[in-house]
Length: 474
Ligand SMILES: NC(=O)c1ccc[n+]([C@@H]2O[C@H](COP(=O)([O-])OP(=O)(O)OC[C@H]3O[C@@H](n4cnc5c(N)ncnc54)[C@H](O)[C@@H]3O)[C@@H](O)[C@H]2O)c1
Image 1 (cartoon, rainbow, N blue to C red):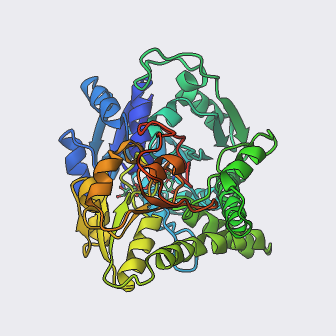
Image 2: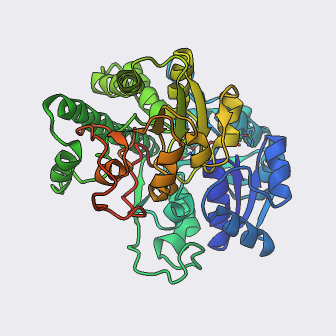
């Protein structure tokens, strides 16, 4: 089918490339001319594992092209709107980019179009879209509007798009439902050439859930807010563990074994970030408020999350005594591993707080330094984790990239000023780190004093632990 995707960000580019991968003819538009230029030259404006491969093969097969939004609107029978919906100062979602696209569709398209909201939008946006398309309709456009919220996670977006748990479609006509079923048929049946897994198989067919538009819109905000609530809950449990001397890792494990609770999103840390949870929780609070519901539970979720950075900085103060003039290494800037995205990343607020206290910050992230530099240019960016650690009084683990778990700890020990690691993600193994002579401070569990190097290593330096990040889909 001929499909259009408006906006080539994390969601739009993944959507466009994956829809082309499963056999559709896709036109993807991008209004940022620098990004568009890169895409047209075969470069990717974002880092996302596997996406380069999928984009390259779809372009080679002639099934994916990039250009203007005007041309995209003229192209597809179905148009996926994937533009940003950032927060306004009052917490509402800013829908101006959605409105601009809707107006352009109404003014330029003719014939029939299925207009699909894939961006995360407040409930009743579909109703507004229908009204808007009707008001500005100048060419006899016939249309349906559908909601098709996206649940992919940055870092695994291609895999999530192609092997989802569920595909949610909010529709108000049989035609819209049938078109969406046809678009997603290869994914529903799990029949396509998988670019992620060489020998792909055994995936469960996703549930294709059909609802009304408003319910689909609500599913997205309710899902993200619920996951954020789990994170804030375990963060409060972590605070309690620190006070009473319990181990939050064990508490979370014990809780997660109950299938009614589940183990996911029970990793304490320095709080959730990224382009989804913080803004979606805020937007959901506002949606509830405007509907006359006081969703104060979510206000607490937000408040707990906002307090995480100050609690973490307090640990740094406690350990360093005086922060002013100290050299601090930041390992990880992205809001989660395997992405270059730093939007609303806890690292940004943390670095700003440390700079305000007079610390000198040396940072390293495997992918996110270019994007971080545009927000916090005043710190030192380093070539690797070792360079960032040179002369440091404390190393702060802020994003749990796998490579931080596989470092040469003897080498790290030899280059720091003070052997102190404060792990904001519980990413490292306490026994292993202390064995190498570091003082190890983490979240919701006892601080560990350095051991002598003569004792045996309890874990291999390359031992990996499940990712811990306090964000997932969006
Ligand atoms: N990032 C995620 O993990 C994720 C996951 C699920 C849902 N979402 C939701 O999807 C939406 C997009 O998120 P994102 O992370 O991809 O944002 P993004 O900022 O990476 O991408 C949006 C893109 O749309 C482009 N754009 C804006 N107006 C345009 C127009 N008129 N024509 C063409 N391009 C235009 C922007 O330049 C930008 O590149 C948001 O509503 C977000 O909440 C995000």
